[in-house]
Amino acid sequence: MAGQGLKGLLRRLTAPEEELEAEDLQRTCEQTGATPVGKCSRGKPVTVSGRLRSVQYCPRSNLPTLEAELFDGSGTVLLVWIGRRSIVGIEPGRAVRATGRLAVRDERKVIYNPEYELEPASK
Picture: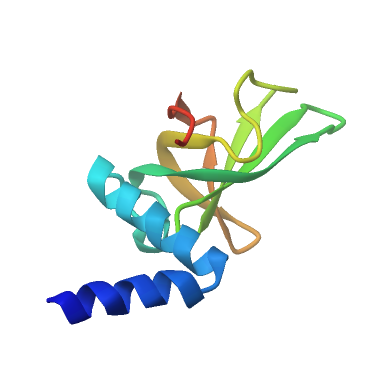
């Protein structure tokens, strides 16, 4: 058992930061009961949890949209709010839990106008 602890510590010291972050996000996803993005299916209602990698306002001629890429360690999903230019708290690096029906646009997973909760800031 002590060997396992030492092996785990060595791995955490030598593994790439992105890999460790992905593992932490996957663990958090499991603990909250959210569905891993990598296992989400088109057309199904889902709840996902992760960290926003990017947030972008996309002006369109008919309707503006706010798009945020959520990463949970297993994959990414694009959260799209139609008719919004900004949302307080929706910013890169923020932990978010989102619920909605999963769609696919340009071969990317998307949830349009998701219900969302801002998670507490990380420690």
